[in-house]
Image (cartoon, rainbow, N blue to C red):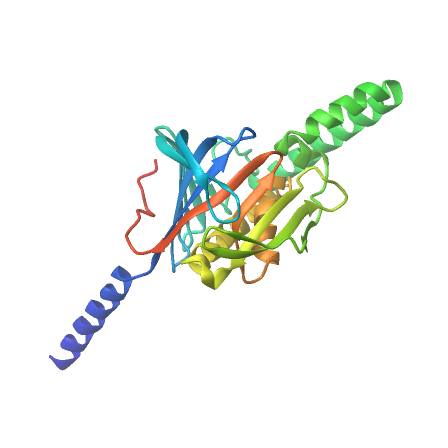
Length: 288
């Protein structure tokens, strides 16, 4: 009897601990080149490493004064849900929802629809052959029509998937700039992030001490786990890491104990507009 009581008590304690698991909720707003709101995102993460990212449209409703740091304080209304992504840490998979459809991304790609009979080994061989053919065609074009080849390369550079197929991913560089600012409630340090040897993905980042951002370590840890899975999937497919994911991963990996509060890239700006602990989130939605 005593053993049964002990086991029951242990189960109750464990369940209560799971119920009380910390869930962080971060909000961010992306502004377009004209400074108007375009997308609003809500990120949920728990201390088990799970992550849920909801993206909505955003419409400006008013603009009044300026917030700390000289940034425009823009009011907006949240639009319709545009996208949902869920990272399940223990299962090592991502669920990507597009309307009523759900796609599963996992490091084990052997049973994915469309995979050749030989599985990942055949897929990698096919990908390597396609890359070799593309490189050979591009080399021939450089000899016959250099101007057309340059135009094609520039267009491919603007396509993340195509660029990843045509070249090996470069190292992402993170450097402090000394451009420190007070943004909202945060004292931030300025950084510049770029792909080694090119300015194509040059991004300015202002980041606060991670412990000054409520739930910063929880969200940062979950994001890091998601990007590690993404890199593993891309590597297993033989196409390397996408530049966008490489940049975001570099921000998390190489800034140490910092958390991004504002980023600027190609006339676009993203700001952290809210950070709190508490509440709940569904990290296991139905996905067929």
